[in-house]
Length: 352
Ligand SMILES: Cc1cc2nc3c(=O)[nH]c(=O)nc-3n(C[C@H](O)[C@H](O)[C@H](O)COP(=O)(O)OP(=O)(O)OC[C@H]3O[C@@H](n4cnc5c(N)ncnc54)[C@H](O)[C@@H]3O)c2cc1C
Image (tube, rainbow, N blue to C red; front, side):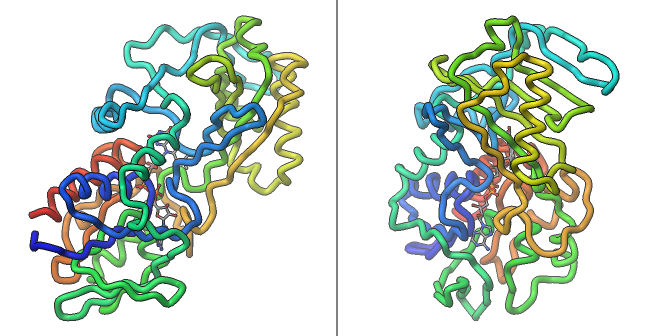
């Protein structure tokens, strides 16, 4: 790498921020351009009425994710296991009662980050010089001149770079960014077909003043082929003094109103867990279909389709343009581990 190279990272999700942080440890200060008005991308923790950290995006990981675990250790962030003690429920048929089952204590439990997943984003942000990150700056074009790349935002701002790293879902690279000259046909054809993990998912969170389900011997874990809630888990905080649930809603309910979704969630939970379930302090939900995760023609794709495609290993625009982000990598693609691993691999490539 030459001295004083100007590096632009596009996307302030986990991969972009991890890369900016790793570069800053080597005294290389990149500029991070982020389209939305917040950091984190598919990581978003909100606080309920009781200040309970509630995850609308990424939540769980395991010992199989060593790069995430070592980043948490380095940043001195704590992890804790997902609560799973007691009776869990499985609704298979609408005309039969839910089946009860017990989850054996797992050798490799699922973990959560104490204080919420967004603590990882906020801690990375604190370690990076704030002037490096520009929010509400959506990249719309990248033009190659002889020795440089000109990155243009939707506000018309032009920033010159020696290297540009794409830390956003590949499908968005294809639908949002115009390349001048165009990228080679083979990579242009792949981009729209790369599935973005969890695009279209509907996550919901509930906050309660008491963990009534735990007191009644339930784990809070629910799987259902019947109701609007298809998966649900206990969402009590690390300190065990704030309580709630999180999970996923059936994809077809995206066409309902929010009021109807909430009503159906509470009705399903009341039937399964009793009257206390019907009076949460907070109900929030997020349908992950906004322009920051999904854009342009949505091509039907299977989960993880074309994630880690070999063409993402190549550089483009005369060796100045790099693909990164969780969908660019063939190991743990779609997950937080993949986002961090992609940052690690890209760091090696750009420091060469
Ligand atoms: C509902 C949900 C649940 C999930 N659960 C889990 C889980 O339990 N465990 C797990 O490991 N993973 C989970 N994930 C996946 C995890 O969130 C992602 O793997 C990870 O956050 C991806 O990071 P990234 O930086 O690669 O991409 P992103 O987080 O998508 O970041 C890309 C960033 O680029 C920005 N951007 C987009 N277009 C432009 C543009 N034109 N110009 C500038 N910026 C742009 C976006 O706004 C975004 O901030 C979940 C995701 C969702 C949505």
